[in-house]
Amino acid sequence: RIYPLMRVTLTTSDGASVTVSRQLTKHSGFIEKAITDMAVDDNAVPLSAVAVDVDDATLKLVIEWLTEHRDDALPYPEKTDEERRADDIPAWDQAFVQKWDTKEDQQQTLYAVITAADKLDIKGLLDMTCKTLANKINGKTVEEMREILQLECDFTEEELAEIRKENAWCEN
Amino acid sequence: MALNLLDLPLELLYGIFHSMDDKSLHKMREVCHITESIAETTAINRTKDSKSTDLKLEQKLNKIDVTFEFSVGLHNGWEGEWNYILPVKLFFVSVMNYLQIADVNYNSKGMSMTFTRSDTISFFNRLFPLMGKVECKSLMLLPSTLEMLSLTSKLFEGKTVHELKFLINNTNQLKLERNDVLNLIRTSGPNVATVCFERCFWRNWLIQWMHSQFLPVAMILMCSTGTMALCFGLNIIPKVYLRARTLERNFGSRTNSARKHTCTVSKERQSGTRFNVIEMRHEEMERRYW
Image 1: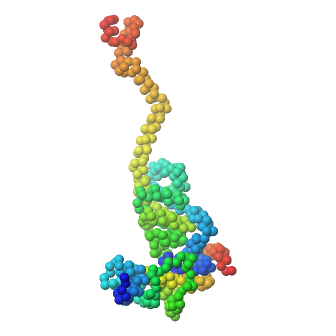
Image 2 (image 1 turned 90 degrees about the vertical axis):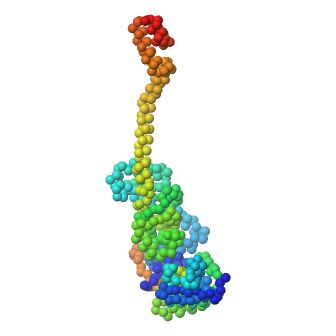
Image 3 (image 1 turned 90 degrees about the horizontal axis):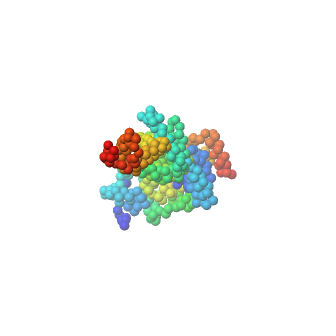
């Protein structure tokens, strides 16, 4: 049984400490495991000490999402590949992510939250952020994709021509 | 440090790619090499459940060859003994070819064996209990293979493409457990995985064993077998054996009877008298005629 009043102190990689309700951390498989298996003292989980590199700003975003989703059912339902859809993001989550668009390093924030959700094992947040990134790519041209993902083309002309030939149906 | 897509763990990349629509997924093939291979693998997995594509996929997977190159006898200290080891190598190559375990190519630089995937698994299942750990000289895998590996092998679990590349490119002493290698073979993806073993058991175990045990034993066996074959071939043993048996049957104890017989005959010839010398004892002959 998890008591709402129980609190957990999380220490981030940049030294900041954030105390949150255990009701929120129950969504994080990593923190729950750290508390139960690793027998941390006083429910204090130093994230940097257990190879989870999450900074203060990212952790605050994670906690904001957890606060909104504190009553979500657990365990998070596993979805098959066929059930995986990018267009079923709840309205609150969409608004939550859109807030980052005002930031200059919006893409970096998204990557940081995805990484944090992965390392802290928060499946709901991970699923939502991955879908958000997929939505950003969906429907874009190849050049736009490269720009969004900040990737450089490393194909030779011949290789690119071959792939374009195979992908000709995508242009229709 | 600025992050980009490829800094994310591969499992996440697969999650992101799975959330894309078909057209965008295929367009991702044009972005760069890594996104190409992830998109291809995702597309294969996406259609895997479809029965119509099962056969194609299975056929594609069955064609995968895994090439292992064993640098037998080429490391320091063995080059001078190339000729000495030659019979061992020829023996090994012939056994491998006879058992049809692998397509073995043998040349002056060493030996390379090409296994099909199922052959390789059964082969290593038999040999790995003897090997323990394998030290890998170099591990050359194509990107899509790496991604497949990252999903199945604990060795590569949670690594990003960059980390995997670093791991693969910067280690000459990558130690692989048996299961890692088997996973590597099983999940080698739609590409060829080439693994070069340098300091594996071929040097540490098999060759040294052959060098120290096999050759002397083989030489002794060959010499003794050859001698026996020669003797029987020239009919030496049967002649000696039969002659001894005939003499024994006629005269009892071979040496004494033969000597007495010779003596008797000699004296009979000297005396010119005809006797049944075979039945006659030496003492009686002396008493009667001398």
